[in-house]
Length: 332
Ligand code: AHM
Ligand code: MG
Image (cartoon, rainbow, N blue to C red; front, side):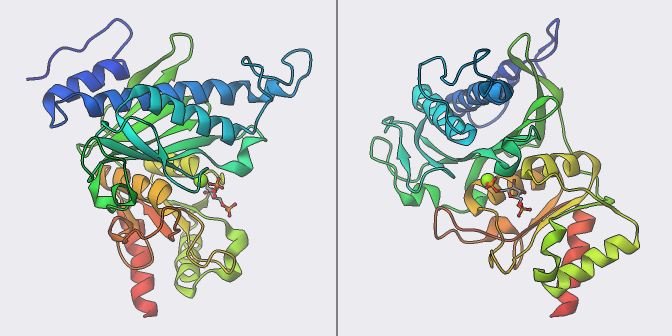
């Protein structure tokens, strides 16, 4: 039976995690604590994102941050803050970040989990006050607890994720995650400093009328992609492209749609990174009833070889991803 989680202002993320911990397998509390640490990192990055516009105003805010350090690029700051939160939390033994070539060992060799992150995605939007996001993927380590994490812990494959999600720094800040039992969304209440459960069970509409891609790459797209997009246009679907993966994905998750990042002449494997962009968003979309394809089938089945490898991504409403697949089959 559901325990009562009513509170005067709603269910906090903290309470929700505690409740789920008692319902599901992650009973040791370590994954719960890791999710809390990620939420804390999200709050810290949210604060930095909100301050970012002020950072350049000398006098009002100065050129240095509170520690007296020189102001740094926001994505670098997010990376440092995120890793610090995971190190202090103690549950993650290692982190893989878009911002770093190699694994970062946290020093917590007894932690049972590893985390792959894109600390601040949407780099072209950071300096122009447009929505950006954080993406994370969590695995239970395969190496012995107490030893140093290795490549094998991160190269397990998308189906081995135990939790994944994202934080969207938009007109509201939201955290959306899955532990493999559906998808829940939380909205940040800045005056209370808490995430509140706002979307208890997120499912993506089966059909959608929105396509999201960088049409500037049209002449590089494979023929089947152009065929599919032409069909979308014939049906007068809306083209919507923020250029921040998390924002485009989030909109399509709620309203129905497809996001495409096909191979291009510049990025022959697509632009997006498998481990901390494609895998976590694919795990989450499948949990929400959607689909995510790479070049040949579900992106979660792509074999990982490198930390920073790329993959094409076609992700969103199942009917749209299937229709895209039909164009691929017809072209073969
Ligand atoms: P980044 O990790 O350097 O920010 O790149 C990823 C971003 C995604 O957020 C976005 O969907 C995509 O790159 C946009 O690429 P493009 O500018 O080629 O359309
Ligand atoms: Mg990125």
